[in-house]
Structures are given as structure tokens and as C-alpha cells.
Length: 357
Image 1 (tube, helix red, strand yellow):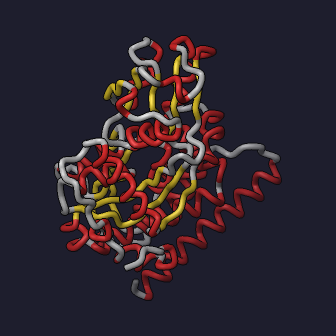
Image 2: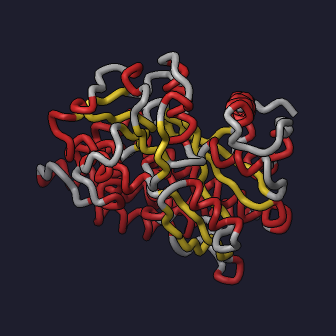
Image 3: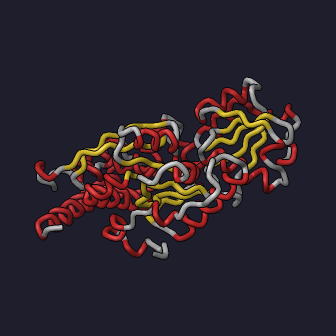
């Protein structure tokens, strides 16, 4: 970054801090209990503008899964952090990380959000993509919701039942891990492939006996079933990681865009950590949910940039499971180090990398 760019960035931070100080004093003097989120976001965005020469701005499209795992991306967009980094970002909302990554491969996005399962399945088909950062993880992202009137009280009761699952996503692998935890296999149940957004209604209409569903759609399923619902939390059966993926050609041609993108995400994570309630309000508006539902799920997610060695270990485990269950045509596990792009994160937050390379 040039000396000029550095001081312009620091100036933006000082403007933001001063704005916050004035707002706090205003609230104390007027005894205002709650400040409008929209006003705060306007102030944040205003502090982020004007620090980039229009000639140096970059255009990019993000394919983003409409799930709580993507909260830092939505907060970064709402607060103007992408704009501050000189990125004119178009957001393409998708129903899952799998569909977001499909958009990437079709050339409809430059970057997409993706969980572990699509990364592994695609690695058996192609070598032209790479992960350049993890920005969220959760042990409680995916849950198993079942109907009591289907005779389901324990995990073992799933034997012989129809379970709704989104093939090729975290919903898919979590179900497999859940079944193994309860001494069952995928052959012991009937998996019904469906979109995650359709799962709550399918469960209510008795089209399936249970669903492997991620947040926030679990809340809708529980609301629709009422007292007839039984919930099996994920516990520590499986930790979902949410990652940022791009094509290797884009990473080679636009490394500076990926660096700017990561800085925006990192700034959003810091904002979330310092401004919990405002971030929850942004999330509630983004997902059109009541604030209580957002607050109830908030601590299920850990936000922060990283590239951990554990990520590669997890992918290898998913790959072995996929091979054993004949979900992939090949029998050899790929070398997942070949699917990692370290450069952008090394430039932005090198201390967050633990991958051995």
C-alpha cells in the first residue's frame, strides 16, 4: 500500500471512531436506549467512502450462500468495507455454498462461499479452483430435525426412515457423520434429495420423517412442527467450515482483489466482535428474521480468517467417506494442498495460517 493510501485508510478509521464517540455521547445525554441500525450503517459507510481513486477500483461478483455462515460477508457489504477497499462488489445470493460454487464455475461469480463437502466432491472432478481463506466455523450449523409421530425419539430410530438431505453439501456429510455416531449407515435410511429451503415444509407435510438442515431453516422447521418436533443438535459430531473459493486463473490474474476482499472480511469480523447487537440487527434484516431468532443462534458461530492444517485433514476424512459410500467415481484422495492459495492471506493476516507447506 502506498504511503498516501495508508494515511487515507487511517483517516477513515479515525472518522469512524470519532463518529462512534459522538454517537455514544449523544445516547448518554439524550438517554436513548437504542440507536437505529440504519443510521449507524450510514455513518460507517460514509466513513469508508472517498479513500480510493475511482480509477483504481475493481469490479467483482461474489456468489454467497444465504446462510448464517456468510454473516461476515453480509456485514462487510452492509457497512461498506468492500467499497473502502476499492471493490465494487456485486452480490449474487444463492441457496447454498454448492449452488454458489456452481455459479463460480459457470463464470457468473469471481469468488464464492463454500463449505467442505462441495470442495471435496469437486476436487474429484476438477483442479482449476482454490480456497484462499476460511472465515467461519460452527459445530452447530447443521442439525437433525425429526417428527415424533414417525416414532423417532433417538438417533437410532432413524433406521428405515426417509430423511431429507441436500446432496453434495454439509447437510449430506453431517447426516453421514450423525448416522455413524448412532451406529447406522447411509444404507439404513432412505435419503431424499431436496433443497434446504424446501425442507421445513416437506417435513411438515410428512413427505419425509426427518431432515438434515442448516440454520436458519431449522428454526422454521421447529416452528412448523411445534410439539411434534424432536431436535438432535450437532454437538461435536462435525465442525462445518465456511471458506472463500475462486478459480486458479482469477487468483493468478487478480491477487490484489483477493487481498482487498480478505481485508474487507477481516474488518467485518472486527466490527462484529465490537458491535454485537448492531451486527445482529444487520443479520436479522438481511435474512428477514426476528431478532430473537438471530440472537439465539449467534454464539453457534465463530467468525475469523484462517487457513488451518485441520482443514486439509477434514477434507481427507470427507473424501474417504465419499469413496466408501460410492459418491465419487475415483478411489484416490487428491492432494488438498494443491487446492489452497496462500498468497492473499499471507499478505493480509499471515499469523492466521497454520497449513504446513
